[in-house]
Image 1 (cartoon, rainbow, N blue to C red):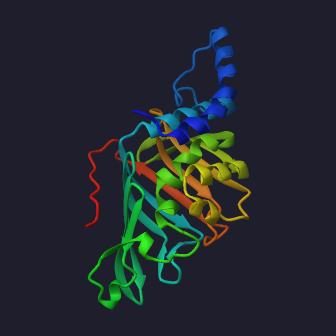
Image 2: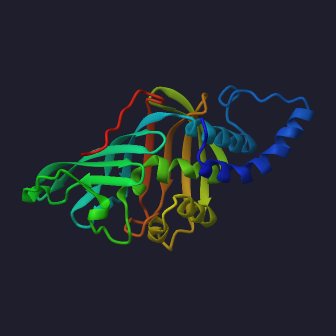
Length: 265
């Protein structure tokens, strides 16, 4: 599979750091064991594991995920649609769908977000006023600051591209996620990293929406012995309409499952 340009660009600097280390290990006759085979990885092994997971996740054709938000919500339509959790799925190269139940004026409403290519649709905010159009294009709504809710919740946009940008990686032990043993790694995304993310998303509107106050994002990632990311937590504000204490917790499953995402009519 051909990887998108963002993964090639972001891993290049990490490869320059890791290549001499790998060469030294080879000369010394050291053979790397599987990530979870010999207990807690060292700092260098944690960096290497993150790099391998970056490529492994990018090589997937599809996956499902659930997103939980703690210490805050994401406002899709200010004071109207607010997300605190959702389930979704991604089909490469550029299809995304997610839905959640939200309460509007004491009425439980299913909100859906669909992205195909460069176009995103969401549940019509006027659905309670009798609108016949269930999904509307983002371009037909004024959400402020060029905000696209898919950018705030789609792991292929806001989460997985951050993997190669993780610095100061430290393993904190092993944990089980959905019955699967994983290595848990803590790290940070620097302001340089968030700036790169804004640029690599390819949207000036998205870049301008990223909060000016973002200087560093603490993260945690859980990686299994197949180099698959089982969970990814991002702590802090990314977009200016979010709380500075917001925690995004993505949990991944059904890797390479047969998933179809249909374009809304």
